[in-house]
Amino acid sequence: RYYEELLNINTIGDQSWDETKKCYHPYEPTPYFALDKLFENYYINENDFIIDFGCGKGRLNFYLNYNYKCNVLGIEMDTKFYKQCIENKKGYLKKNKREKDKINFLCTLAQEYEINDKDNKFYFFNPFSIHIFMKVVENILRSFENNPRKIDIILYYPSEDYIYYLENCTPFIQTKEVRLDNLYKSDNQERFLIYELIYY
Image 1 (cartoon, rainbow, N blue to C red):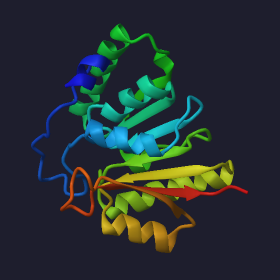
Image 2: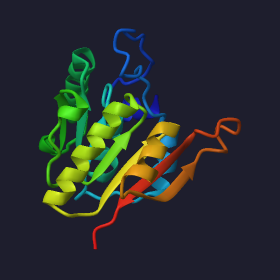
Image 3: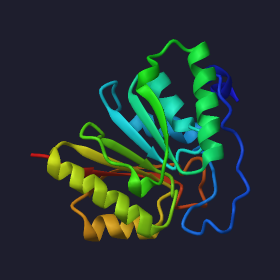
Image 4: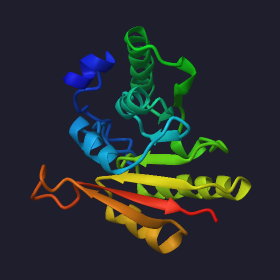
């Protein structure tokens, strides 16, 4: 609850899920202690443009903007969660003096989001099926062709499908692993993987 009060937002709790949305996974925010661990080991600065696919209620976006003053955009297809993001943004800006233009949300399908030339870091906590993930990565690669730059993909609790696709079908290279062994000794998937598209 510390961060929720500090940021003046409400992102707690898992949600029941409509079983008809078979390509999308239920809402579950990344734990704050996991985010703390990740960003002790991974550098972010205020010039980064970070996209959170399947942002839910926006936890990652507010956390990053508060700590690093970076540009963040949450992509969310569920209108209910999107409205909660907007409410959370109002509460966040009321308590924290930040540039409102640096934190935004968009209610759309992930694969339909047009990657901006400035977007350089992309976060995924298993939000949807491998087929949608592949389409999103294809969009990222197309954006890279238009504007070559260093691009990172950050996976939390990565699925084997995501890993296999990135490592065998794309030019992305795994450059970092941040494990949460001290928190989840029995779960090998409790980790972050960073994949980088290096621009020479």
